[in-house]
Image (tube, rainbow, N blue to C red; front, side):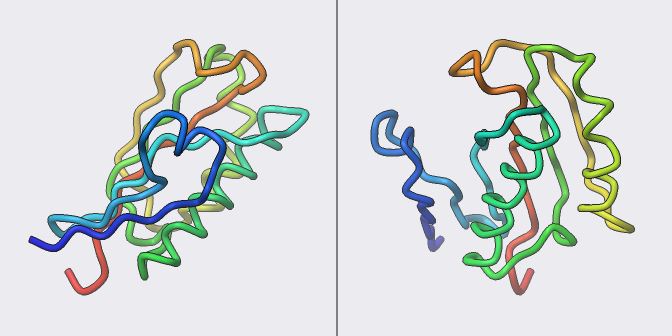
Length: 121
């Protein structure tokens, strides 16, 4: 099996020892992604942009998504993100889960983890 690793050169990748995405076993696995921003919606939008860039490098897109996990320290902040998420996935929504939990830094309001079908599968 061929494994391809995609880095976004984010500040935590080298420090922690992971990469933004891994293409393996017919899937693109995108690591939990956080982003800067003043609001949870700003952070959600920026995280999705980082994810979209990794997917493009893997030859995939949000329309190939099969699974998404959302992690938020405050579940009440999830609903404001719904319109953006609905727009992002359109008519191809993945299976999804939202979990309330602490994130790596209190400044982050949302972390998004995504799995898509790999190109050509």
